[in-house]
Image (cartoon, rainbow, N blue to C red; front, top):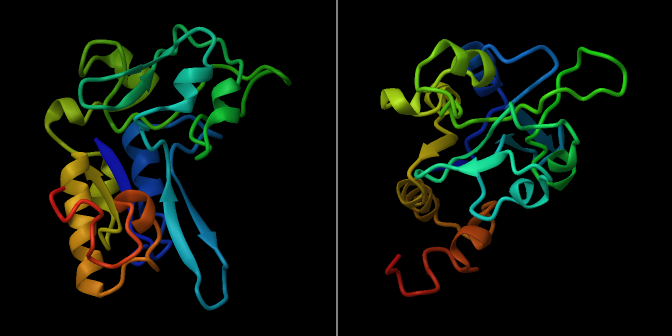
Length: 203
């Protein structure tokens, strides 16, 4: 399971942010998803929706001293709040700023870390009240995609099976007739030429 945000389609409406807050009843001071805009107000302005990207080689997992992170069979990176000690190492390691800590509480005390769960809940029983209170709604267990992606009005934010998401993004890029200029193209496909995958189009 992967997220991809198409910067050519994102209109900075923050619908994904609102959907996430509403669906999961995220605590005050925590934003599991946010919209970042670069070159705001000038030609070439781009916006992109950012959250936990559920990395294949997640740096948060590598630095956690208590190993509270784990990966599901679908490839979603989740964490166990009962194990988390609030050290904040994951917050420093994550390049996307995904791990968040609640704003309330004693000065200097971080509390339990919170982050995007890809709407896949946590280690508690699927659909249980305990799971919802700690991690939010488990939409994946219901056969649904994350609320943020489903609520995106321009379909800039894509979520789901990594291969399917990549195919959709590739089709869009080829339809636009440009590749290297589109954010993420070189990283995703390793090619600097539009429509020319490095392995001859077999993947």
